[in-house]
Amino acid sequence: MNNHFLKITANFFATLILIAILALPLLFAASFTKVAGVKNQSKYLIVSQIDKFPDMTLSQQEDRYKISFDKLGPSQAFLSVLILNNPTNQTQTYSLDVTSGQAKPFFSEDLDNQITKIAVPQKTSVPISLFSGEEATAEGQTIEFTIRAN
Image (cartoon, rainbow, N blue to C red; front, side, top):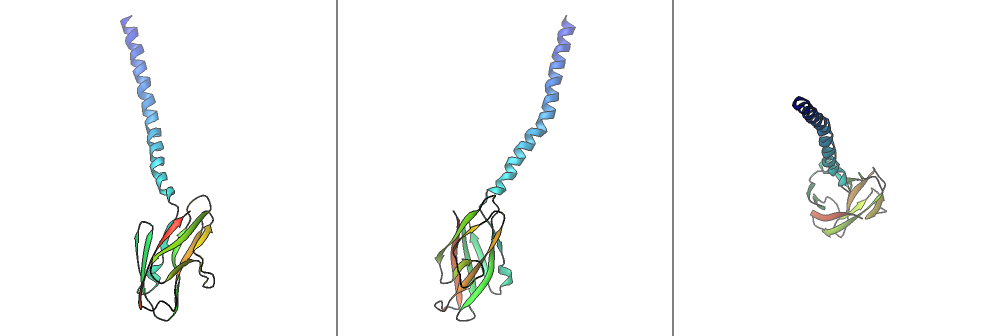
């Protein structure tokens, strides 16, 4: 009788170990996908094109962007300085809010339609350009702005 009870106990523990060995990789996989999913929480991604413009620098702190450049003429436009990507699975509305500087950031490359608020469909991009008009007389210009996702 004692030998029979020992076999039942051994089989029970062997079954528990087998279940643990099979379930453990599934638990790790579930935890890993949750950690990897954090990357998809961003409302937008910015790709810099600053290196294509001489004497232009970009610095960023969270959603605040600071661009410095040398103005070469009375009015000057810099097209597609930044590219805003909508990585989400739905249309997002973005707006540009200038905090300091005389230059004007706008979505698109159309100087006749300098929009500062735009709806961007899922998984698409839109350029952000800069325009410094005649009223901005300083040779060295700096503009600070934020990008807000609504």
